[in-house]
Image (tube, rainbow, N blue to C red; front, side, top):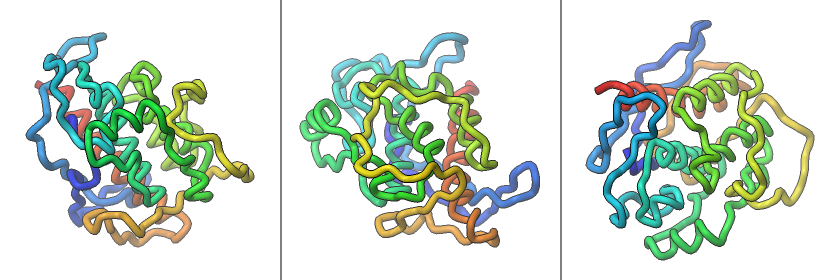
Length: 232
């Protein structure tokens, strides 16, 4: 896609169900496919953008390699989806860049505020997944959409994700200012800066409603993206 961001994701009212019949969230529609490319239908090969030196996308959400005008592949979308998710759960735009020059400097020199400093209700397991999605180097990110979806599904049902912590040098996050006891259940959304299309009301128990709403959005988008990019 090469331009995943909140403004390019929309929810419709249809409610999706998980295997147990619980509501996961609305159906996600991905918009603005003007920069999208067809994925190569080859195994063990990362699809790439063959245009070098041409930068396209939105500075705040694009990965470092895209800001530098390098080849990009599906891992650029993994990063951009992570940046979108960071915006959802913290209420802050990641690397609030208005220009490409600002994006290049910020992504090379700065780190994002730790999500748990902005939203203490985020679990450590959720941070593991988000940190890997936003890794500086693409080789440190998820190497397939399927692995990412499995970890997101694990979070929804309260299981540990399969991913391990990435090296500190690869993380996009600052060190946490304050530590708190490990949390494994509830994700609290920062809604102040969340675009209106993402608001969705579900008849769920309160302690599960926000977690499933958030991860349902990501799972719905991720599933559609995987199918769209795996098929010719």
